[in-house]
Image 1 (cartoon, one colour):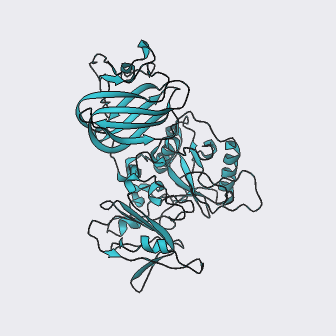
Image 2 (tube, rainbow, N blue to C red; image 1 turned 90 degrees about the vertical axis):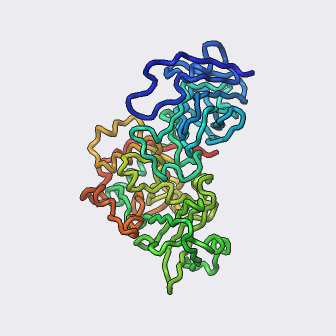
Image 3 (tube, one colour; image 1 turned 180 degrees about the vertical axis):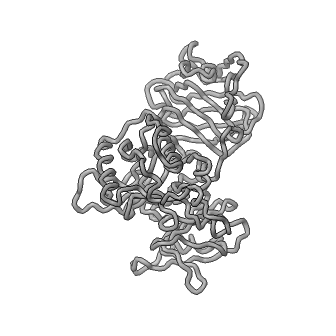
Length: 460
């Protein structure tokens, strides 16, 4: 049975800045309520101490009527302790036909920010599938936004390359269980900083992938595999994946021995990655990489064995772009490479492989794929940081880092400036870095305030 409740419209519903919460004070329907004091209206009243709570069974929902069809691309769910372990968000323009725009099969409670491709909707429904506790589903607030109207919003393609539920875009709740050996991992991270050059660097022209986005209709090229690792054989599947690549005439790989390059074509929804890329007699060759189809519906993880990083995590997910630094906000997990890592057989999701090496079984070695963050309670604005470092620090609090590769120094990657200069544009990092060397940009970063998350954190 459906129950409906409303609250009076307040005079000043919208905040002075930021996107308007389109669900505020709107009519709400729910599948059930635990009591009269926890009806659906309590989830759209703008109060952080009132809540909707369902009866104690899995199949429950809450639905808000926005009053008219609006473009939306963002829903905030502020969970009480009784949260959904699995749920979907659905939209409708007629209250009959529903479209799933977001799904989360491994919820962790707290404040959940669901972002998805903009869609027209009048009704928005949280459809609970599986509870995390013996209690019902309990929401302090359900908020609906069109971020394109926010100040500031400035959405970028890198905010949502993969499926909305991808781990790349999921915020880490402020209150979350940490790894049992978090302190040991922090100690080893700091040891590596001291041992390897005394800093954490940001790779730009070398060991950072250029990204080229060819238009629809770009001529296709065959990229062949060359056996740079002297395996004595070539991969038949990879040959098929690279049989037809829309390679722009201006494409060029990164400097350095890795020769990385990424091709992403939005019109075909396809991503290609290449490692040890070269051109021989006018013919493109690469040693390894892959092709990812239907990128917008992908989890953001390469199929096992493919992709360029040691973990199967694509560059386009975890690199930082110049556009993000200009905006002053990164809305995804950041990839990081370490030097001394746990042995290859030990890794953490979202990695699906590793090239770690620990023959002496040294203690506290961090496995590839491990997720960690900067303490979210730290006041980053009070620190003496370069603007680039401050932007990275705030993203590290909200989305965290993922260990995606092994390198000769602890390092992050920006989108290689060749992505811009190959098109005749200026290197954007000259202005963004403002004379600071890339190895000094993160000076003063509070690495001792890291928090490591449990093995396989967020795994569906």
